[in-house]
Image (tube, rainbow, N blue to C red; front, side):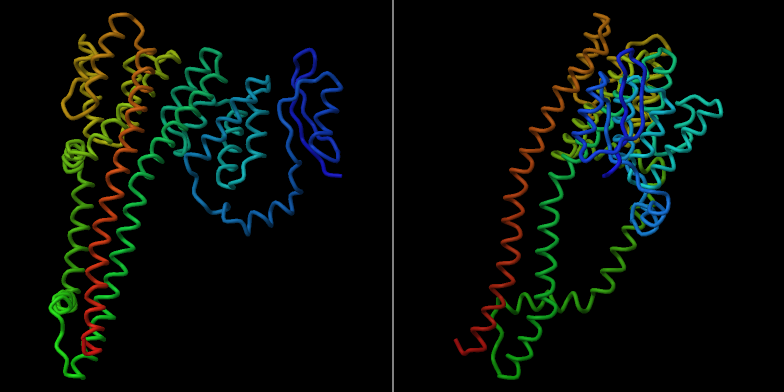
Length: 405
């Protein structure tokens, strides 16, 4: 029969863990409940070390980089075990055992070893770039206040909300982009390979090319003559754009004008408003001061223009100014944010107000994404249909000409 590892609490509240041999997971659950224990977790026992070594060697997870969702899952598991009464080291060891990705397992093992050496949990995870700075600050406050399980859960929730937000934006733009690229690829193949072959055939037969097909062939000829130069120019301009974006003043300029775009800019501003208000609300609820929260959020914003505006807001608050006026920047966050922050500062409930602002704008963001998809998808279909229709029309006109029609 297989072995199962368990984590439970006895009637006196003390944590218990071990391994039981049973036919099914349900049998282990019934056995532990029969002892009067509160079951926290049951999982199949890990394979022996030799098997693990072989699996790590052949598994892609051995060399795949750590993603945000790996940290998020680990935090979620850690919060559950800390609430169940396990010590931090036991919880970290359990998370390590149940982590699939080898690189992430190595990180958890290193964190546990650093804590055994006397380091704090916050300083141990700060040594690894896979942990966001927001989680580091939350965990530092949790260690100081004794609410580690709560702040770890909040860190996981913040990462989950951010991941879902980015997934929504990606989903809205991925489908139309893939369809457009596929249509352009098929059209390019027709223009470069199929239509020129038909031209050779029609010329050999002494037939004239239909005007529609001739126009397409002129485009094909132009690309064949100037294609290499065009490709070199595209590569050069792409490298120039990357270099300009890597230059700090250039990135600030690009990030600023991205927020001013008619449709995409609004989506970016909504996303930034949700991210800022939710993260700041969680930080303030966890006991972090406003100045420390602003300093942390400067590092979270990927948009350099918004990060600089947060730096200005922090300097203004340090000088005695209010946060609301500092956030009322045109073409930055949504206007409602500064107005609601002013209400929260006056009433002394800034953390609750920020969470409400995040929930409201998250609904607005989801609605905007659905509207964008509803507009973009038909537009892409029309554009793709026009391109493909023109190419296929030219192809069949050439076939009719070859048949003497």
